[in-house]
Length: 606
Image 1: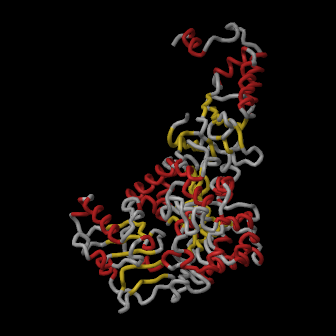
Image 2 (image 1 turned 90 degrees about the vertical axis):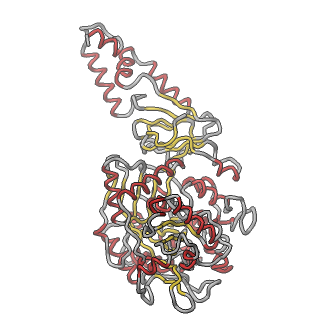
Image 3 (image 1 turned 60 degrees about the vertical axis):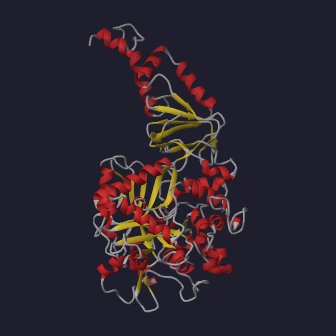
């Protein structure tokens, strides 16, 4: 390429050839200093998103709504009014001929501005503070959520077999799926192994289907034969038996470990992981707190992170089902991988079961099943020993607690560590996952101690049809008490999640449930006003719970969670204003674009 051709490609020089001087050099140096200090008006990878109606919700209390945000590289460079953006444009245009040439040559000639539709809004990237990535992908291969009867489940399993010739032609292949919920069935009873054998296509096949909450598994007689002799009892679990003492085919909580289902291969995990990531991005999620990954799953995610295959931020809680200390089995990783999106600095413990299967550990017997008070999956001493050791080793400890007994035991352990062990609550940030049923005293104690309650609003609207039957009129007053927990929180935070695949991946399902306390069809046991509506949250509280509060719960409030200059450019454009539209229109909202690290991960910029 000739010298003339090079000059034409770069634009004409702003000074005669051969007259480069000390003055020019000084201007170059000055521009360089301005650039590294962030004061150059534009850079080549900078762009702006603007809303003429000012519908950019930042979740930054110092500047809650703006007209424009600008992104430079992977970070937010400005949040400003359109007038301020124009002023930056004028500053560039008023620069000297040399400065204009230098900036266009090295920093780009103009800023790219995209305008969202008048009805659309921009919000920070949404987070799910409690979910199960691999289990969601696993469940999607045979999803039984929509089944309203036992017969529909059987029909779904048959359709799955018939659509998979490799399984149809090999009766020894395991069939696995999940999502059944007997509380939604006409039969209103637990299923049995005999229900499978009643159909010729299913008889003799190894089948294991998880309940929607993941705390029960229903297996076929062939699986019972493979297991062989069963123990009389399982500590922290239960084998459902008939009146003669024979197993019916349903295993609860720790008893599920007796089922010898084949381990997932790397190929299967890749399908499960990629499927969930694709769905999550389409719903505007840019961050997920994975609530309990085994060492095998973590190794898979670690290798994915190293090759840059993780498309969003993952805050992973390690989990091993053991009362013996297992911290050495989990690698400690912060901002790990090619794109620095994988963090593992917390662990997940599970103390009790779930309300739907009568496994949530209660202080008193169930109102509708007086022969049980639920299941404590570990003894208080075993839980205390684990919590103390994980705290000493610097792990954030996040504990599954549904019932009021489980919550009470764990709060006792946390309180002892804080008061006797001098645990620094701000540095440690222990969490109770679900915090679903509590006494009034423990609701107050959670906030007073500074414990983070991580809750899932759709659990309230899914469980509301049977929860009061399980708990009675008095205990229900301390259940799903989201506003009470938020009002009592020391730092006024309440991270929100879904617990998918127990509930749907779409975070707007949780948004709607939290503000309305209604099912998706607009109903509740208390009518159209919502179920125990005094515990509903405001839209601003829910948006913060799905962004900045979730960031605080994962030690990332200075990096993500709000649209603040200097933070990561994770944001979502929604096609309607969920902060203002009538409540019944919230669930019709669609994601226009999901952006992670300043780059489009789903959809397209306007």
